[in-house]
Amino acid sequence: MIEQLQKDSLELLKQLISISSFSKEEDQTADVIEQFLQTREVKTQRKLNNVWAYNKHFDPTKPTMLLNSHHDTVKPNSGYTRDPFAPTVEDGKLYGLGSNDAGGCLVSLIATFLYFYEQEGLSYNVCLAATAEEEISGNNGLECVLPDLGALEFAIVGEPTLMNLAVAERGLLVLDCVSTGKAGHAAREEGDNAIYKALKDIEWFRSYRFSKVSEMFGPLKMSVTIINAGSQHNVVPATCTFTVDVRVSDAYTNEEVLKIIRTNVDCSVTPRSIRLKPSSIDKQHPIVLSGIALGRTTYGSPTTSDQALLSIPSLKVGPGDSARSHMADEYVFVKEVEEGIKLYIEMLKPVINGK
Image (cartoon, rainbow, N blue to C red; front, top):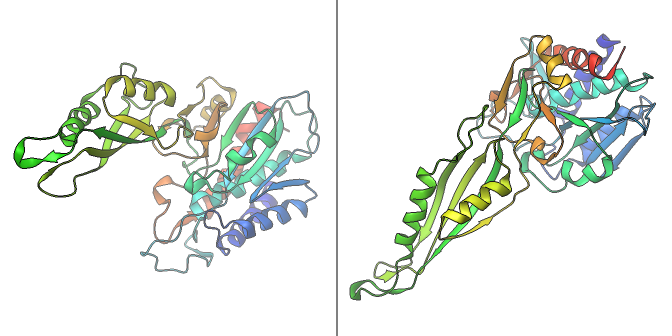
């Protein structure tokens, strides 16, 4: 059965690569995923470009686990020497846009779902969700359908990790800050220079150290990345705006970090979003222990994924290498997908009592 799942998964991945599925334009790949499942007699549900399904013997009295990955891609960069939509296998590598991020993960999770689909007596229900807009952290992807999926106990999020276990992931806050002074003529010592006021707060962002330090990530990181002020050389500026990139560790919530910042600076601080939360799963969670027993290592992921939208314990793991994501001439090894399917299944067997 696994060999057939591997074969079908690679054919599905080639089909997905051949279709343009930029974020917000994933309708055709959603169609393909839907058809792939329906031809295997799986009842699917769909909202916008998100497709999900449950195991055949769904039992509402049992907890549900989520298998999630995305089918949108970034746009190919200018360094491509191959047709990004031409799935080609050379030297064991399957080339094509989205092959590594996150097509290999998605088709491997679909295969895993199908492996358990008809089994009875599972201790967990299994929900598969192939979602959109991950690459832009869009509102019409996983976040859009979470309320429709029902209560979820924990999740596996498919992203390329070389099948190692990302047990924590940084959250992200992007802050728009405004320091306010008073305009005046530079030659007459008039006004209150907003740039000087901003400098004090910028220095705080540079030097402040949060008291709690993440075991996985170390200190929380804040970086001032954009600054803007002034209109002409002889006018003291009334406002100075700057942007701060905050990579939130699992030691804090986004709300806690925002409160600490606002307590310590004079400028106004407006987060663009607090949606992208830090996430983690206990190292003693059965799914983590199962992965470790299979020789997989644990680590903290510096990159953000749909895991940031989940408020349940979640593990990020999948075939492929994060270093290849968004690179020119993107590829995934065929062997990585084949082994990824096996490892997903072997990780889940002791957790959900699969056969």
